[in-house]
Amino acid sequence: MTARNHAETFVERVAARTPERLVKRVRGLSDRSIAWLFITPSIVLLLAINIFPLIWAIRLSFTNFKSNLASLPVRFVGLDNYISILTDDDVWHGMQVTARFVVCSIALQIFIGFGLALLINRQFRTHSFWTTIILLPMMLSPAVVGNFWTLLFQPQIGPFNYVISFFTGIAPRSFSMIGNVDLAPWTIVLVDTWMWTPYVMLICLAGLRSIPDYIYEAAEVDRASPWRQFWSITLPMVLPFLMLAVLFRAIEAFKMFDLVNLLTSGGPGSTTELASITLKREAFEKWRTGYSSAFAIILFVTVFGAANIYVKALNKVKQR
Amino acid sequence: MSALTAAHSVVEASPRAKAFAAAAVILYAVITIVPLLWIGATAFKSPSDSIAYPPKLLFEPSLEGYVNLFTVRSRQTPEFIASLPPADSWYEKLVRSHNMVIAGPSKVVPRFMNSLIIGFGSTFLAVLLGTLAAYAFSRFRIPLADDLLFFILSTRMMPPIAVAIPIYLMYRELNLTDTHIGMILLYTAVNVSLAVWLLKGFIDEIPREYEEAALVDGYTRLQAFRKVVLPQAVTGIAATAIFCLIFSWNEYAFALLLTSGDAQTMPPFIPFIIGEGGQDWPAVAAATTLFLVPIVFFTVVLRRHLLRGITFGAVRK
Image (cartoon, rainbow over all chains, first blue to last red; front, top):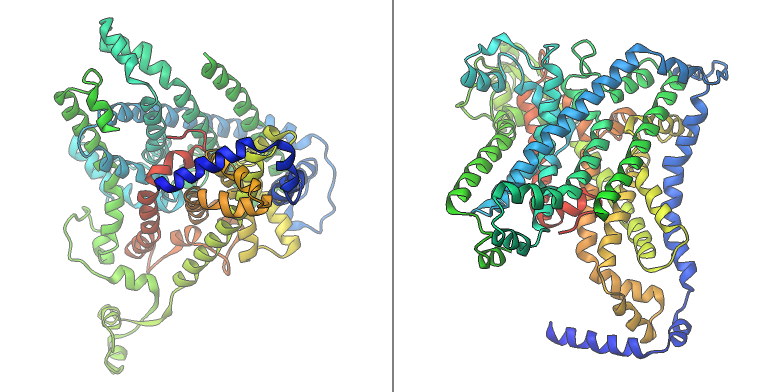
C-alpha cells in the first residue's frame, strides 16, 4: 500500500511538471467527442422513455382519447380536460387527502426521525446494530409489505388491534384500521411512518455528525444550557439536512401509490384516495386517457414547481 | 468515530443519558422489527393458525405455506387419495393429509425468475450507461452540465402512474407490453438517473491526477478511463448497482400496469396468491419472506453507502 502511494505521488509529480500542450497531444480521441459519446446513450434513453411519452401525454391531454376504444375518432377538446379537472370537487377532495397525507406523515417522520437521530448520536454501545434494524423497512418493497400489513390490521385475526387493546383496553374487535372512515387516513400515515422514519433519521444523523465538537465545547465554556445549545447550535446546523429530507420525502409521498393501493386502495369510500390512486382509476379502469393525461400533467407541474421553489429556499438556508 | 468523541469528554453523553437513549432506540427498533418477524412467523403457520382468532403467538410450525406457494393443488375425496400409490415425498404427504393432491407447480418460480432477469438486466444497463455519463460529467466541461444533470434527476419526479399512461400506449404500439425487454428498458431509464448522480459523486472523489499521469505515460483517454478510473470506482459502482437492483426488485406500479403474465415480477404477483376462500396467508408470507430476505442482506452490506444512495449522492458521510 505504501509503495503504491509512493508511486502515485511520483506520477503526480511527473504529471504536474508535464507541459499542458504535450498532455493534449498524447490523448487519442478528443475529450469533447468522448464526453458526448459517453453522455449521449443516457440522454437518448431518457428522451425515449421519459420525454417522448411526456410530450405524447401533453398532446393527448387536449383530446378525448380513450385507449380502450382506440379506433374511435379522436376529437381535439382544447383545455376542456384541464378545466373539468380543476373544477371537479372530487379532484380537489383527492388533492386534500393527498396534502393531508403528505403533511401528516412527513411531520411525524421528522419528529420521530430527528428524535431517534439525537438518541443514536449519543453513541451508546450496540447503537450501530439497532440502527441497522431500524433502517430495514425503508429498503423493502412498499407494495409487498403494504399487502402484508392488511393482515396485521385485520380486526379479529391481526395482531395490531390486540396490541392496541393490551395498552388501552379497547376491545380488539370494536375497530378496524382499514375499514373505518376516520381511522383509514391515519393507517396509511402510520405505515408510511413505519417505513420512512429511518430515512429521515439517517439524514439527520449525518447532519448531527457534521457538527464539529469544538462548537459544543465553546458553548460549554460559555455555560450555555443544553436547551440553548440545541436551539442555537444543533437545530440550525442540522436544518439544511432536515430540509433535504423533507424535499425527498415530500416528492415521494406526493407520488405515493404502491403502499396505499395495496393497503386500502383508496377506501373506505374515498377517504384515502390519493392523487395517484385517482389517476390510476381514471387511466386504467375508466380508460379516460385524455382526461387522465391532463391530470398527470397537472400533478407533474405541481411537483416540479413546488420542488423548484423549495430548492431555492434550501440553497438560501445553506448559504447562511 | 467513537475514539474521536471519547477524547472530548464535554461532548460525550453521560452514562444515564446513554442508558435512556439505548432504551428508547431499542424500543423503537423492536416496534420496527415486529411486523417483519410476524411475516416470517406466519410463513411457518398452517392456514388455520394464520387466521386464528385471537392471533397465535405460539403455534406448531408447518411447512404448508412454502409447499402451497410452490404448488397448485386440487381437492379430492379421501377414497380417491387412498386409491393413489403411496406418496413418495414429504410435501406430497403433507398435501394429501389435507385431502388434496398436487396438480403441478405454481407460477411463483417463473415470476421470481422474471424479477431476477428484469432486475439484473436493468441494473447492468443502468450502471453501464450511468458510469459513462457520470465520468463525462465529472471530468469534462460539458455545456449546460448543471441543466442536463437536473434534467436527468427531474425525470424521477413524475408520479409513476403519470409516466405509465403514455408508456402503456407506446409499448402497445411497439409490442413491448408484458415483455422482459420492455420492462428492462423502462427500469433502466428510471435507474439511470440515480446511477449518474451517485456515480458522479464517487468519480468526483477519485483524484484527477491519477488519470492525468496515465495520460502522460501514453495512455489514451479511454485506456486511462478503463485502467485507472474504473478500478478506483469499483466500490461506488457496486454500491450503485445494488441500489438499482433494489429499485427494480421492489418496483410495483409499472409492473402492475405493464405486465400481466410473461414478464410479471413478484410485487404485483404476491398479493394475488390465493388459496381456498381468500388469501392464503402462509403462502403469501412465505413468498414475502423469500422476496425480502435478499434485500435485508443487501441493506446490511450497503450500510456504509446507504445515505448516499437514498439522497442521490447529495449527502455523503
